[in-house]
Amino acid sequence: MSNGKQALADWTTGAEAIVYQSCASCGSLQYFRRSFCRVCGAPDPVEKCASGEGTVYAASLVVRAATPEARAHVPYNIVLVDTVEGFRMMAHGDNDLAIGDNVTARFAQFAGRLVPHFEKVK
Amino acid sequence: MSFITGVGLTAFGRHEGSSTLDLMSKAAELAIADAGLTRAEIDGVLCGYSTVAPHIMLATVFAEHFGICPAYAHAVQVGGATGLAMTMLAHHLVEAGVVRHVLVVSGENRLTGQSRDASILALAQVGHPDYEVLLGPTIPAYYGLVASRYMHEYGVTEEDLAEFAVLMRKHALAHPGAQFHDPITVTDVMESKPVALPLKLLDCCPISDGGAAFVVSRERTGETGVRVLGCAQAHTHQHVTAAPALSELGAGIAIAQAKQAAGIAVSDVRYAAVYDSFTITLAMLLEDLGLAARGEAAARVRSGYFGRGGEMPLNTHGGLLSYGHCGVGGAMAHLVETHLQMTGRAGDRQVRDASIALLHGDGGVLSSHVSMFLELTR
Image 1 (cartoon, rainbow over the protein chains, first blue to last red):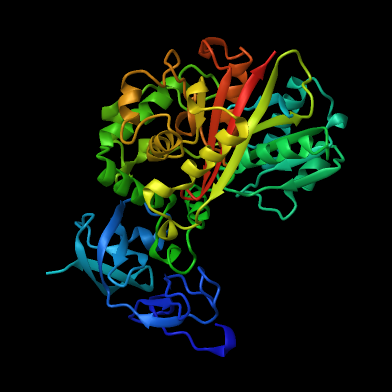
Image 2 (cartoon, chains in turn brown, purple; image 1 turned 90 degrees about the vertical axis):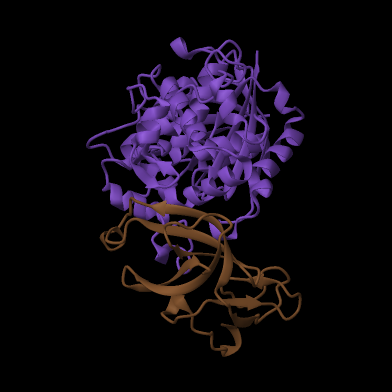
């Protein structure tokens, strides 16, 4: 991060959290971490923790994986989720998820790492 | 003005013992001979990349190996759109007077030069290293995601997608250089092994060895000329997570700009060469380009519209799905076949009229697009 600001820990660094950024200048949201807003260029977007709630936008059940580590998990469902906060993210999900399902995130181990895993809201 | 003056294409499949440079050289030699030129007349070189032999200066590595000293040379990297992006650049280079004859070349021993896992892993790196790749997606999974959404929004079925695999295989049967020579049916596609649902093995292009090349020149070198009428690109995102809505993808943007540059309409087109890494890619691109209405491309395949004798012959060599996919050279084969069709040299595969062609390439996950119109001039 610019200006030496500490980033919030999230699943990409092994913590049980989904973090996104919000621009203090223009209000745009972004999921991929940057030191600036991708829309207006303003520096230091504010980091926030997402609720983990969202809707399934797309899903693909992976049956053929490319590494031995991933192969141990097949089949696993790769999903794109539109979060209630308003950004889209890729994650894992239960194998029976369908587009439009309301989902909530938990965290699971995959190939030696922590990953977000969505399941239907009960 | 610029002309595609010569084309060269190897068979795709297994080239045991051939390196990236071997396959590039073979295709280059064919293209230069086809243009009626000598090596010494080539003053520009544009090449793609090789996942088997990555190099920071592949164009000069190739030029030295091939024995030429071009005035202009470098590699280009736009994934599956690289072939047409290089053609677009070559078109502008010769129009601007920078060089006279640009050799556009690519080749890769992607099938025999590395393991299948290594290929799949290398390609999955088009995903975001922190936010996507760690989740274990594959290229088929990125396109599987897009397919699931496209099917949901436009009522396309897996059987619809299977039609594209069957059509490409049917076309490949007429080309001796194609990787596959056995006919397939919709049932075969439906029953093929699941890879990344809804995509199954026969919805996916294979991994191949092969090479392709062409020469782009300021003036024609033969009696018939294949002229670049106009071309355009669009780049909306890299990662599928950051892709815009299906209705706002780059193919629609690129084709609109290319139509303007060429001064023609899609209704003028007589032959289509469209990127087909997966069945969903082809279905979506045909509809994005206006070659079929939304959700109706499969119906057009069933009615024979895209067949060799149809109104809009498509990828008559078999496309990536059945001629094969050796990386950058894969989609360059579409242009080689288009050139053969336009100049009446496609033999048993010859279509009635290919006087105006539309070509489209896609790189990444529908991330980078190049649309191009070619015209036959006598």
